[in-house]
Length: 122
Image (cartoon, rainbow, N blue to C red):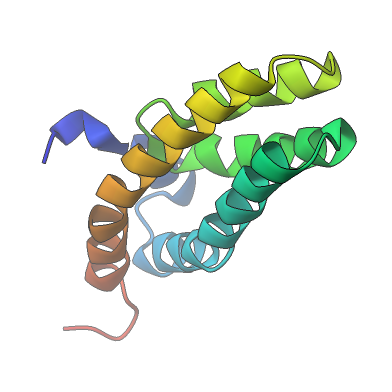
C-alpha cells in the first residue's frame, strides 16, 4: 500500500502522541465515517436533495481534515461546494466513487493504527 494513502501526522500533532487520544479519535472515525460516506453516496445517487448532500459532505470535511485519506478532503469539499450551488451531480458521482475506493483501501491501515494505539496494550 502506498504511504501517502493515509496521513495521521495532524492527529499525532494535536494529540501530543497520546495513544489513548489517538485510539479514541480513530475509533470515533471508524464508527461514523463509513456510514456517513454510505449515506452521502445514497443521497448523491438517489436524490436531488442538495441541502442534505451539502450537510453530509460538510460534516465529512471535518473528519477528513484530521484523519487524512488521500484526496478524501478535496473530494468531499468539492461535493459540498457543488451541492451548495445545486449543480454537478455527475461530478459528485465521480468524486464519491473515487473517495469510496480510496477510503476502502485505507480502512485496513486505519484499523491497524487504532489497534496499535489501543489503551492497556503492552
